[in-house]
Amino acid sequence: MLNQKAYNKKISTTKLTYSGMLVALSAVGAMIKYPGTSIALDSMPGFFASLFLGPAYGAIVAALGHLLTATTSGFPLTIPMHLVITLEMAVTAYIFGKLYKKGFRIIANIVAIILNGPVSSSIAAALAIPLGLPLYGLGLFSVIIIPLTIASIINIVFATLLYEIILKNRR
Image (tube, rainbow, N blue to C red):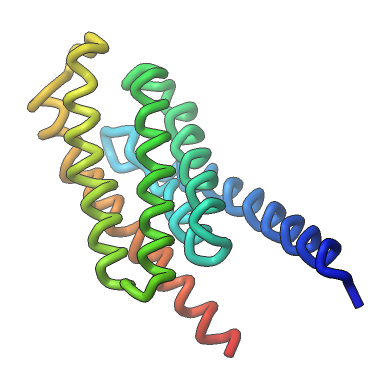
C-alpha cells in the first residue's frame, strides 16, 4: 500500500504522462488547419485535459497546443501576438475546466466558445494595430472571427463529448 506522498507522486507522474500525450495530439491537430488561415484543431486536447486532468493541466496543454500551431504556421501574427494568444488559450481552457467541474457544463461550453472565438478575435484585432501588422483592426477581426469560432465549437464540443464518453465507460 502506498503512503500519501507516494500516492500523490504517482498521480502527478500519471497526469504528466497524459499531459505529454495530449500535447502530442495537439501537434497533430496543429497540422489540421482551417483553409487559408493558421487556425487549427489544436486546442481540443487542451480542453479535454481541463476536464480529464484538471484546469491547470488543461491550461498548459492548450497553451502548448497554440504554440505548436503558431510554430507550424511560421508565427504569421508575430511572436508577441502569438504569446498573447497562448495566454488567452490557457485562460480559456482553465475557465472552461473550472466551470465544467462546478457542474455548469452547458455554460462552460458556451463561455469557452465565446472566449476562444469572438473575444480572442477581438483581442487579436486590437493588438494587431500597435504591433504594426499589415492586416489589423476590423480587417483582421472579420477574417478570423468565423473560422476561429467554428474551430472553437469543434474543439470544445469534441473535447466535451470525448470526456463524457470516457466518464460513462468508467462507471
